[in-house]
Length: 345
Image (cartoon, rainbow, N blue to C red; front, side):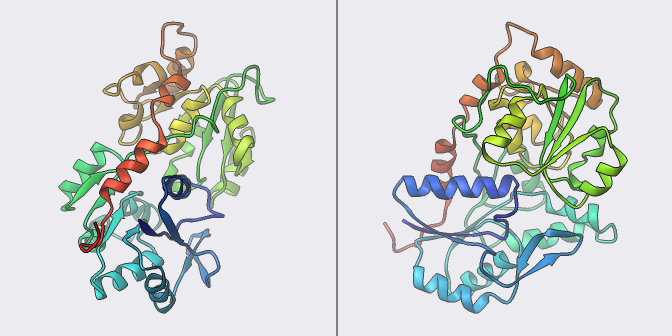
């Protein structure tokens, strides 16, 4: 098939949505499909208020209309609710083109965290409006599916996430050059990630933060003992994971947490709150989850118990747990969900 994917999240942004779509487009091509990515790259963009690292492309309806007409896709997937996503939505509705969407981010909570005057109820109403015409609204977990259904969303379908165990793997004998134990967070350094809940903990050893974002400068100034390594990719990211002991995931709003699987693949145990995302990936109801992660409302307790898990010789190792989560299965799930034009076989 010819598949058009529209996303406002793309390089140079480094986050779970971008990584998911990069892997998806590559894997779809490996399966023989023709994929066209519509992204902000090469377009006139403007920085998102309070988050200049994210740039949105406006006034793209005419150009996007031409791209859709010229590519003539069999399926259209709108991955994000930004300016490009809105333009694609309008075009598809105007021309009777079926499309699917995905719910990657708890947008209502994120907007409220940055703009307190904006009620979450108003944002939820807008999100229902955005996704309502889609033939499928894809979600990463059963918990999110139930939550969105309670908010009035329809045609919800599961689209899980995976991990590349060739790229992310343990490195025998490798350690980051800091005092042990080493606690690491990887992700956007932003208020919605609740990073300070991790940084403020009284833990032995060294805390490490990998990533960039609008809160980085303030947090680096407030916590000078923390090692802020900036955004890392490729082998450098794998070595940062593999050279640490415990991955700490303080977010209470992520819908999945792709970085959790990456850390597990590199041999780390996980400490997190017992909330959506961690609960669906490594919670006590997940087979093997109790061997590789500790979820607790006291994050320090979760951290110390996750460190102790590494000394349990009978526990399932994190990297073996991660090996059962393949990207190919996720891609096939996506293909099953996407909207195909009625006159196509």
